[in-house]
Image (tube, rainbow, N blue to C red; front, side, top):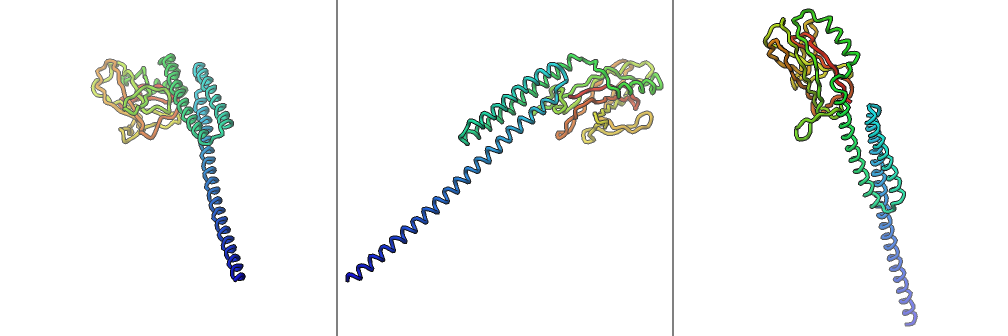
Length: 300
C-alpha cells in the first residue's frame, strides 16, 4: 500500500511539472508575439516620421528654388525675396528644433504635417506677392518696352518689304497676359506659369490709298524658342503671305476697313494642359497676307 502511494505521488509531481512547462511555453509565445507587434508598430511610426520629415525638407528646398527664379528683376522683388528667405530659414530652424526636442512620435508626426501645411501656405503667399510686384513694375515701365533685336530686325525688314503705299500698317500693339480662375473669370498676370491667354490689341492706321471693305487679319505669335504657336482645334491654321510663304497663325479676324484708323483686338488661349513658357514673344500682324506691324511681349 505504501509503495502504491509513493508511485502515485511521483506521478502527480510529473503531471505538475508538465503543466508548469506548458504554461511557461504559452507565456513565452505570448510575450514573443507581443514583442514582435510592438517592434512592427514602432518601425511603422519611424517610417512615417522619416517620410514626413523628407516631405518638409523637400518643400523647403523647392520653395526656395522657385522663389529665387525671380531674383534680379527689380530691387523691390529682391527685397521681398530676402524677406521670404528669412522666413524659410526660420522654418528650417524650427524643423531642427522640433525633431531634436519632441520625443513623442505621434506628436512629432502631427507637428511635421502642420509645418508642411504652413510651408505650402507661405509659398503661395509669396508667389501672389511676387505676381503683384511684377504687374506693378510692368505698369511703371508702361508701353515703351524696348523691342528685342529680333523685333528691331523685323521692323527694318518691314520698311524695306512694304512695296506700295496701299499696304495697311498697324501700330501701338498692346498685349495683356491673363490667367483663368476656376470660376471661368480671367484676371491679368505677369507670370508665365499662370498665363492661359494672351489678348492683343492694335491700331490699323488710316490709309487713303488702300481699298476699303473686308480685310483678313492674321496674328502670328512666336514663342521664346522661335516656334510659332497655335492650336488647330481652337481655330489656328496656316496662311500664305504676299510673298508666297506658308505661315502658322494663332488667330484670325475679318475687319471692315473704312480707310480711317480703327482698333482691332484678338486673343489666343492655350489648352488646359499647356501653359506659356517664360521669355519674350514676337507678335506679328498680317493684313491680307502683308506684314502690317510687329511688337514684343515678355512673360516672367
